[in-house]
Amino acid sequence: MRFRSEVLLPLLSLVILTLMTSSQAQLPGFKATINQDTLNYFATIGVQVLESQLADISVPDITGTDSVPVIGNIDYTLSNIHIVSLALPTYQLVIDSINSGFSGSVTSASAQVTLDWHYQVEMWPHPSDSGSATITISQTTLGVVVEVAETNGRPTVDTGAPTVNIGDFSISLSGGASWLYNLFIGLFQGSIQSSVQSSLSQSIQQAINDNANQALATLPVQEDINNQLAIDYSLVADVTYGQNYFTTSHRGEFIDPSNPQPSPGNAVAMPDYVDLTRMLEVLLSEYSANSALFVLEQTNQLTFTVTEEMLPPNVPLHLNTSDFGWIVLAPNLTSLYPNLPMQLLIEATEAPTTQILSSGALVNSTGTITVQVLLPNGTVFNAFVINGTAHCAANASMVAQNLSVELIYLHTDFGLESSNIGTVHIALFNTLIDQLATSIIPAINKRIEPGFPIPSIDGLTFTNPEVDWENGFVMVATDVQYSPSVLKQRIQFN
Image (cartoon, rainbow, N blue to C red; front, side, top):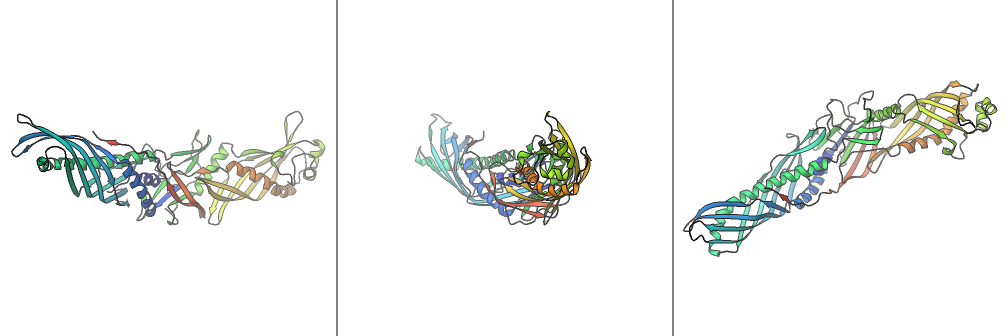
C-alpha cells in the first residue's frame, strides 16, 4: 500500500519537524532534514500501529436479493461483518516528489473476515436458514499516496483513497443446510469481496489521516521560552524533496510574543543538509541566534545586577568600598563612602551580535557597567559608569530536547563614561574586570542554561545528538526514537 500514516504519522510529524506556514517569503532561519533510512524506521513503527488499530474493522451489513436455480428469488443478509487479523508483512515507504508527499506500498497482505449470514426464500412457504462464515484473504496489495499541506499555519496530511487489490479470497461457511453452501458462496462472494475491499480502503485512509494529523497537532508552531521570548517555527517555503531525503524550512526567528516585530538583518542561505548519516539533521542560522539576542535586549532581559553574594570568596575584587582594590581603582570612593556594600548594574545598550564560524561562535555585547554604592538610607549612589564591549566565545550542546549555549569569556574593551567620585583608573579596572568576569559569566550562563527546544511531536526523543559549527549556522545531528501514544481503537464505517 502506498501509505503514510502512522507509518507516516511519525514520519509526517518528523517529516515536518515543522510544517507550519508563514505567509511571508523569506529565507529560513531553521531547517530540518530526514533521510530515507529514517523513513524506513518510521515505516516499521507505522505498520505496527496500523496493524494494531485495524485489528478489528467493522464492515456495514450487506443485504440483497438474487435468483437461485430451482429455489427462485431469495433475500439475504450478511451481518456482524468484521475484518480481523490484518497483517502487512512486506511494505515500503518512499519519498514521492511528484505528489509532494510520500507513497507507501504493501504486498502479501492478509486478513480474515468473519460474518453471519441469513436468507429467506420469497416464494411461499418462505423457507429460511442462517449460519456463519469465515473468509481468508491473502496475496493482497495496497497502495496509497499521502500529501503534506498546510492549513491555517499548521501542517496537515491528506491521504487519497488507497487502492486495495485482493488476491486470494477463500470462503468457509458453517451452519444451515450443507447442500446450499456452494450456491451461497457464488451468491455473495462478489458482494462481500467488494465491501471488504472498500472498507479496508476507507479504514486505512481514515487511520492515516486521523493519526498523522493528531500527531502533527502536537508539533509546536511557536515555542515559548518565557513570557517575553519565543521562537517561531512556521514554514516559510515548500518542503524540498530530494532523492533520498526531504527538508522543511522554517522561519526560526525569536520574537516577543506580546509584541512581535521583525528582527534586524536577514537570514542567509543554508544548505538542506550537511551530512545525511544521522536520522535527523537540524540547521539553525546565525540570524536565529541574533534574533534571540535582539529580543532579549529589547525586553530588558540583558540587564541584571551582580551582588557580593554572587561572587566566590577568592574573587580579586569584592563589592565593598573598603576593599583594597577599590582604593587603588577609585581613590575617592573609600574616603567618601567608607565600608559600604556595593553592586554592579550590567546593562546591554544595544543588541549583542553572534558570528558563527566553522571554528565556533563569537558573541560581542556592548553595554555599560554602573558601579553602585548602597547607602545606609536605602538609596543607591552611582559612583561611576564604564562602557564598552565584552567579547565571548560560545559552546553549544544538546540537553534532552533543548539546544543550550554556554558563554566563555574572552576579554573586554571598556572606557570611562562618567564619574561622580573623580578619578577612576580605567586601565587597571579593565584588568580586574577580566578576572571578575570569571564570576559574572557563570551567572549569565545560569540564566541562559535551559536553552530552547528543538520542535518535535509527542513521543519523539533525540538520541546521541551531536552539535557542530558551520559557517553561518550550527548543525544538530541526531538519531531518534519514537514511541507513539496511539491507543488501539475500533474503526467503524456506516
